[in-house]
Length: 329
Image 1: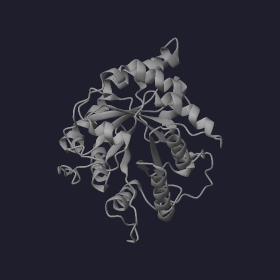
Image 2: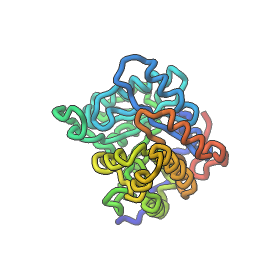
Image 3: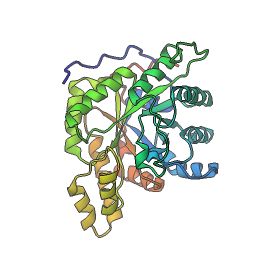
């Protein structure tokens, strides 16, 4: 395992000047939340889902066919979020489009005002509801990060052709800190930092000791100085749902003790919310964690309630970020 620390960022000013970037660089504890895309062409369905999330979050993720299931596109949702005055994090999955389509989509998204892009490889089509679809995977998340960084910083497409007005992007990636192989997860994170990631949103965390061990290694490598890490979690509404997630959703680890606690509760849904509140309170105390990312499938109102009850909004720090000078517009 490499002991090399991540090099400090070369650019000291804003990457994109997005609201999310400003919050993080100001040293405030950031909150992002995930909007579950509708199976609909009605923009009101997006606005209704986004409204409770906007009450508690600095940015809202527009997922890109998560779980390899078809929904409204992340680009369409991002455009609608921006129209309503909300901050969007547009997810880009490598599964469904080749490099030509992805670069064009990102350029179009930037023209619409999208400033935050989250790069993912994407779940395999075999886990979705259309397993006969043909996967693309022309990129993986690391090569996608490199390409978008090149578009932003060098003003070039992957072909080397010049971009007249390069996109201003705050680039994100994902990590699964609590699943095997545990010891290689921080090294994978190092590769994403070197590829161009500015921030990280993790998958669901239900095992605090595992995550603390991950963050210890992250700090040893200096990655907390290079990346803004947003720890992900969300409510479990039943023991049955928890077991399904544990067994069927890639990248999810849920301790049996957590499942048993929900199973033994008089009101499993309330217990699931309480567990999530406790997790959020613990996550914000871990050194190197810059924020949280809260996910709850089709339960946006629950996310708002949980975040407000966790006390995070009242405790957010306004200290200046020691890692990067915020620069000027």
